[in-house]
Image (cartoon, rainbow over all chains, first blue to last red; front, side):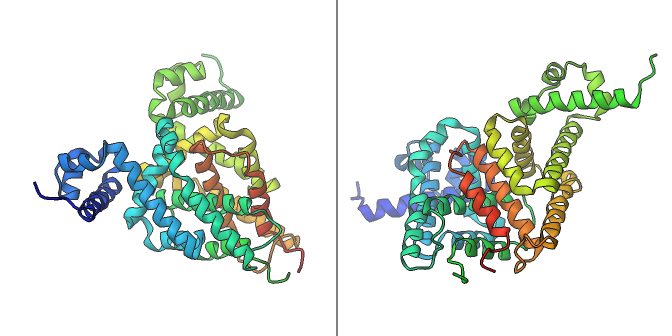
Length: 190
Length: 190
């Protein structure tokens, strides 16, 4: 038996996640059968479920991976930048696909909602931390609590995901995001 | 045969819509079987489908009815008030139930999306008209186009519907809506 290095395990894990992301985005959670997951990842079910206990665990890992990546963008450029990226990629993005499946499963599956709740704090924490830094740098309005601003940005993000999911026209949303960004900033008049 | 007055027809129509609203909210679109619609409305399938061609037409009429009622609130008090009402009633509201079903069907059914598109303009028009009046009254910020403000408020509404649908905590959203309201108003400094 060959020695399997940590790097190799990590690479394999990412290969599975990348394939699964495309598969979930294309076929939805229910439609992403084990057969299709095998095709999308180029690996056998044995290999896939060696890394992830079951399909739900794979989906959760995927959603968590996406949330961590979003949190990285948030830490660097803020949640509005996440929204701009989302808008730029539109419905074609695999990222949006899995985000939509996440929203849908959260809506329809209370047990899944509980499993996800533990993992979903990262994005909120990253958003909040970024806002705190922005406030310290004097860029943020200081008449509204940071928690309120965090909840506000998350609400707009959810609206944007939903809007794109419904296939509504998104060409006119750039200036809306400008307005959102501006509404958390320090007002130029003060 | 008894003479059926226009009033009677209208009353019957509302009886069906009210029952159907509860039924769709409780069981979802697919789960709202003809049998359940009969129970919820207290009428026979014959009576129900005398007024509405089929289940989809009934659902569309319901969504349109809700959108008109929302448009009335918007015309009087603005879209943020619609959001405040939504927040006050939370998940228990039948209105939210059918709104959620609407969002879900718009996501998953392109044909339905097309049928709805013709009917969904009312709310946008009411929101826009209210904003124009507010601008004329000097209450609205004048550095952002009314269409952008309209799209902004609709995006936040969609986020709120989605947030409530996912069963996320909503206790902390009142100040978020204050912020939203404030961000379309004329700034006190100017």
